[in-house]
Structures are given as structure tokens and as C-alpha cells.
Image 1 (cartoon, rainbow, N blue to C red):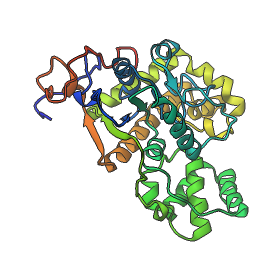
Image 2 (image 1 turned 180 degrees about the horizontal axis):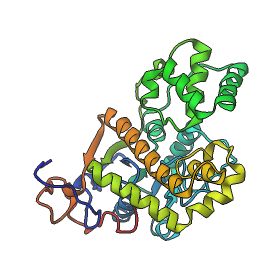
Image 3 (image 1 turned 135 degrees about the horizontal axis):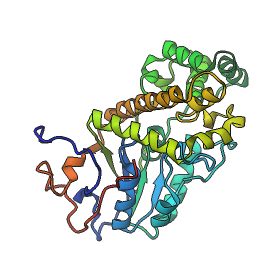
Length: 340
């Protein structure tokens, strides 16, 4: 990257790589992964890319799965969903049990069908664990006895999220550094394995990828840190304008569900409980979202199979444009001024 060039502050006028164009004669089917931190423009970019390639999108955002959660998860709008066929958006309820193993199974089964009519399918989202499950498979984990599960659940019931975080950090600091620390189910699962085996959860993660019978191309969207912070803050403000407060209020009676222990909702639940002012709750959403984006970047940077792409490298008018990567046959805009 040309370091003399500043990062673009808007994602308008950006175009995807030539690497996204799969040769028509290719024998193999290809899954294109578009990853990146929250608010990096994955949804808008993927929609334009899908239209160019005449294909569909699989969501890999584990919170966008839930049909009751739209504004707070920045799920694709009805207008966006009408442009390109999406899968795994609002397909289950917050009441349903659905984990990464279910997702891996469902995606592989669906890809089997989609590849009969599409040479390329796009997967996009910020849930690294779910993307990795599809691309690399899931490591086999030891069975856990019911009383061990109860022990981990009891820790959460009595000490809350903080107790889970402290225990995982104590027993498995390596996993704690990369896990979504706001997700109690993932923390509980790690503790269950630690308690059952006496070994760190991370020791069971082999990192050996399984073979898939399709090609995988992985790209991650990269923004300048300050630009990303500004996008995050602006998106939270837009969410509040769109009715996030009312959405959270409607879900408040079910706040005990794991699906709702999510940035954007739990802070407003604290406001409803009288623990803080609304302005403080909104500021906490921004802070927690920035922290989540930082964890996403940590996860992505550990995976050397990603090709990082920046707004300036794709912008038609930028002196930083990488001509070797420009997707020239189509005039495709990456995102819009309203979708962050």
C-alpha cells in the first residue's frame, strides 16, 4: 500500500478486485468470503459484488440470524434483501438453540445445492468462528458430563458475564485473547472443556483445516483506525434514529436469553433497569462496539489466508489504486452513504 495516500473517509465510488472475477471455464466452484470488523462496509460491498457475479449471499453474522433483532444487528434492510438473495438472515428465533456446528452443517448442505446453479457464492459477516467452521471445519471436542455443564451455568447465574470472563482468562488466556468476550455461551463452552479435561480449551483446537470440495477465496476489508471509529459512532447514532430504543424495549422481557446478551441491546437493558442515563447507554454501545471491532481485527490478522483490501486500493480516482487488482469490467460501487 502506498503509505503517502490517506484512507478514504467514505465507501462511495469503490470497486472490487479483479480477483473476485472467477473464470467462466473454471471447473471448481468458489466460495468468496468477505470479512472485516463491524461497520467496515461488508454488507454493501457484498451486495454489489453479488449483483456483478449474479450470485447469492450467505450471512456469517451470528446475531443477524435472529428474526427479532434487526436494527441493533445492522441486518440487511428489506430493500437490500430485495436486490440479492440472502440466506441465514432472520431464519431463526432468539428462542431457538443454534450453534456453530448447526451453522456449519446447514451451510455445507446449502452450498451443495447452490453450486449446482452458481459457480460462485459469497459469504459475508463478522463472526469469525462461524466463517472458520465453514472454511476449515470444527475440531472434535470431548464430551462434557451434565454436572460439568451445570457448574459452568451456575458460575454464570451467580457471577454473571464478569465471572465467566475472569475464569476463562485464568484457565485459558490464549483462548480468552481471541474469543468474543461478550458471548457467555462461548465462554461457558470453553470452561466446560477446561473443567472436564483439566486442560485449556485452546489445546483442543488443532488448527488443521479439513478439505472442502470447493475453492475458498478470503478477503478482509481494512479501514484506518480513526475512520473506522467514526463509522462505528455514526452507525450507532443512525441505529438510535431508526428505532433501536423501541426494538430493545420490545425485547426487554426476554433479556435473559443468550442471544440478547449482545452489544446494542444489553446497554439499553441497563438503561431500562435504571442503572444509567440514556446518553451513557448510547456511549457504552459505541465503546463496546469499538472493542468488538478490535477483537475482530485480532482474529482476522491471525489468519494469513486473508487478502486485505482498503478503500483507497479500490477507489477509481485514488492514486493508491492497485491496478492489478481492479475489477474493470463492471462499474460497481462499494456501499453507500447511508449503509455503514
